[in-house]
Image (cartoon, rainbow, N blue to C red; front, side, top):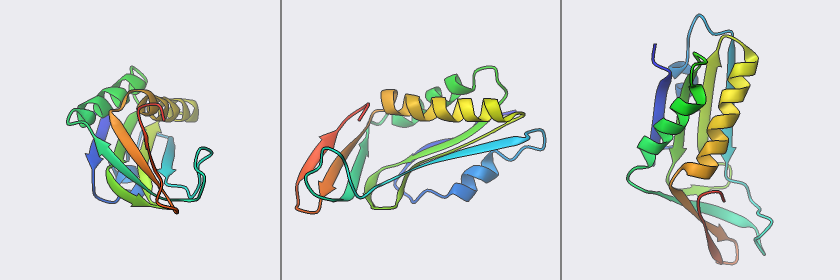
Length: 142
């Protein structure tokens, strides 16, 4: 059984249903999801946030697969994870993660590990665009 069904960097809109379909497994009694969306504010922003512009290193997809594989480890969980690049507006999904496993604790733990390691390891950067035209770059861990 494939433990990482999807590990993708894409400029296409992210579909939660496709991630859920990818982790469908009759032996899994638990499915968790995480959706990271663009919000209209940031504590460091002087005005409202109107967009995030994501860019990725060419190796980002391989890094994302490694993050997912390490999070799964020997749990038997199945992961589908995508990170979007390009310009995203408020409300758009930047990250979608679905995890299926035999039990809820594993599903929650693996899902949380994937998003936490994405924040620390994935070579994707974002340029935050504020309503007054101000921009700020945020890197790994931001």
